[in-house]
Length: 315
Image (cartoon, rainbow, N blue to C red; front, side, top):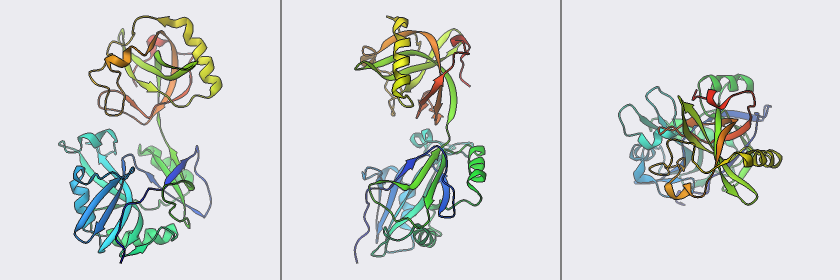
């Protein structure tokens, strides 16, 4: 009998809207750590998306994997931290052991069980096996959602969850590949923010530094790297040139540390930034505010010429 083992995970392709049709099913896109749980007899481990061993970081999840109803198994899923209001929070993963936070594992796929490789089997069959295997273990099932794509979209948005993943019911598990058999749609929050600087790159910029006003103080909120078309990037770069200033306009920079996800700006990185007079307002989408007041997964949406920089406050 072959042993269960971690394999490079299958990844979803991002899209703006969910595909429609009877071949598709839909489940919540959880905002957490992608991880595989592996059981071989009494030996249990967890592997990250990059197949690093994270067993010791999440002992409660490891314990739940040990209770899978099989001698050997590999499950795929997401480790999710639930904040004090009962909502999943990626940021809370770093503080899950604090009072008021709990940790759960949502299993959404079964890749191996008792010597059988299931990756070539259709998703519906793998889901059925997963439901039976994790019953009573403490692992939670991320099952298909009922309703039409629009009903599901409305419900998931209303709950404030990150998004939805659409999966072809008869699709196999293509290890290590980003597949169009899985389509993810992320629902992000929006915020108007003031541009206070940028990190140069060749003849343009790598990222914008943005913030909001608290009284007369401009508070740094994060970097925006994504969402720019070549034309928009060129237009913005030209608009920034006459605003060049030697002084950093953000009152909370440099940061004491760069942050776990690189939200902050260290003293060394400050020397690489070009500062600008706060005159441009951009609308930005993002996944959430981190505990230290930074944006996560920020993406540029457009310029807001109708908004004065001084009127931009954190919403």
